[in-house]
Length: 424
Image (cartoon, rainbow, N blue to C red; front, side, top):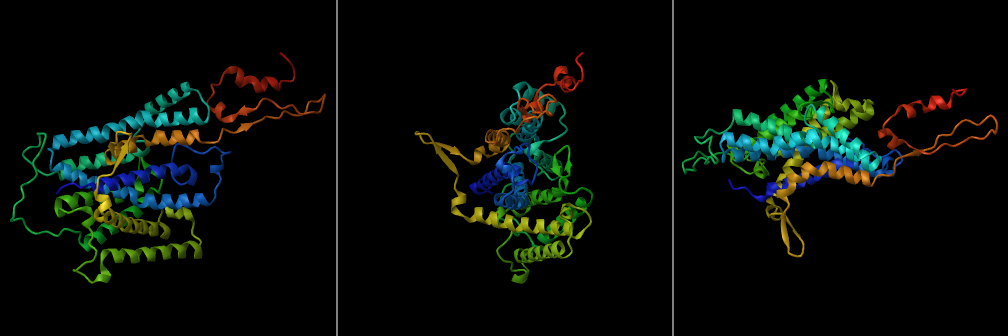
């Protein structure tokens, strides 16, 4: 099956969403990101824009990573037909394993060094020490490359379990199986029972895992949120299945209507009904029974069960809509490119999408730190002098900068010496 630009463009679109998601975390307060606004920064105060960013992050987190894993599984199955197992593993190790290790060891600490130097005014020596300390203490994937590490693990499992058997596993290129006219006909879309079973299993597994590991609990070696792992597995496996078994494009996985069951029972319409029921249930238990919002994060309660069903339902509907939008639109089938310079150099946007994903962390944090308000300046007021009765202000103190300043014996003893009743 020929590879079109639709999925490359969709992956570029998702990369932009991920960058915007991470850039908005400090101002929405929802999620984890190295940079935090200064306490005296206007962006640290909640307003209408904060609510908008919260809604954006919630919806974006619901579907973006699942769709990433679906596309990754599809492309891995496609690559497996062209390469032997050994070449496949080597290429995945170079493309996924090396960037994940480099970012986790060096870049994660460097990002914190950027914040210390640019925003807080610390010295470059501190930034170097901070980067080295983070590299020495690394225990797994850090930052956005957790996704790269998880995909690498999934690819390894696929390579040693369901990899297509060829006689050219040790060669550069493994020829795909020859097409014959006597191949058995197959259904080029998912059965409704597969969709319902997969989503139900994913929702149940998600709910059960979150009773022990609520949202925000990460599996240290990979840095992945345990509560979302069933969803990622289902969508990656669906990508493999779509190419290997169905031999179809992703936007054709779910048909517009089904001829096997009444139209009212098609997958999309059923999941829309489930979505409405779950939203109604959430409002009922939240406002009528005054359940805690923390129950959404996990535990054996009705809100945690609701959120597991709601999340799987919404991600399915959004993924189907985006896949159709990019798969059927002529604007999405063309190669996205940008002309630079007077010479009209053409830059393939999709080709540089992965590089943008890898380097966006330091770039976004650098811009955020540069545009942040100056660190908070405080003045220490000494008690009134017995002789004059007037208070004496001391030199203004940059609290953020002093946070990274080296502590010496003299500075550590200064308070005790100044309050000593008699001179030595």
